Length: 286
Length: 262
Image 1 (cartoon, each protein chain N blue to C red):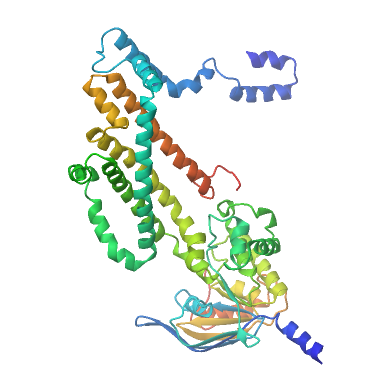
Image 2 (cartoon, rainbow over the protein chains, first blue to last red; image 1 turned 135 degrees about the vertical axis):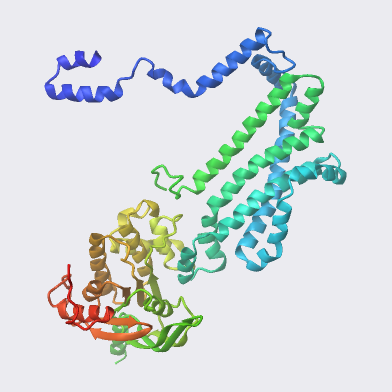
């Protein structure tokens, strides 16, 4: 309709042009809503959930209403309890990641670069890798009690293997043709490592890091729910004892958000350092 | 007297490396790939090594380029009685995907050169291969021919005395290939290095080389001069006799017994 009205005042050529353009550009009546399609399903679920709770179909001891969770969030935020527990969990996660990740990265480097080092340690590491780290919890409680040492140990152990394996693999699979080329131009030792080996291994190392972040949260949640006196996992566990399901659900939601935030952070690092990689470029020049 | 002597020295120092191979052998296990190669190459000349796949031509090239040290006999690459700088251009461009085009070229100067000097010289080398405007791009977005030109700039940036080319045009399409051949000839004439080109393309060898060495079963089967004036036209009529001689040796047939039936 619009198109036809416009076309009357113009010549044949622009009429045709208008028609062609309008068929692409002029939106249908529901087009503005298309942007909201991804949030449509969560919204429907949330409102159904809220309606079921308010109507009494869903008992609050099974699942609290979304609004109750929001109220619990505000209550814990104002009392400072939430910030304190989140900070404790965050600190445990980061220190475990740093400790385990650093050791894993260094061992991966040394085993990737030196056959002797790999022969000496790789078999042992692969053997330990096959033990689920959470199976060690009883032993860890005996060793460290329920103090910080236990959490640090479990998280470090959990993040160790993905980072180790992917660093090792990344270095071993650096293109040998590039290595030969760089050596023929006189690159040896650290110069060779910095210009060729490390950048070549980086995509693989990042895969390990993202995988490690998932394991980091998983291990921490389990460790905190079993043996802790602070942290988000402890908060959820003690809330369960008082039937505060709203706090339990809140803790779960915060874990989801923290996991997502960590993943976004690594993605940011990736696009920063891997902008050369065809999979990460969007036609951007360096 | 002294000034005059210096002048001669300067002129001579621009004409590339000489190559002397004496009784060069190379075996992989019980398989002898090179059998007593004797070869002497004049400074500043353009020599093509042709041969079938598996003839040992690439092994010979790796020995000369210093990539293979487990060979017998002696290899002497010198310029003015001093060790010469040799650079190699591979069949694949072998560019670092995580370095920009100019970063890749600057890499050709080695790890010791200070980065600002390196970038200035790299820019000049890039201009020489006609890619000055792509300096800041990632290699991933270049075409195959452009990548090989970057690889050529990387090999030339350090002003080598010897440039060894391992079928660098083999993977390029026909048109890009012709463009690269004239670029190669041009930089060889400008920079006056010794060029050693391994190829299986007889026409390419005839277009570019002063001399063609044909390798067969690890030995030199034919060693001929190409006397035509430059620049040469591809597939020129005068190539005919030499081309037939080379092809018939490669195909192990005498010149007139084989008829081509299409």
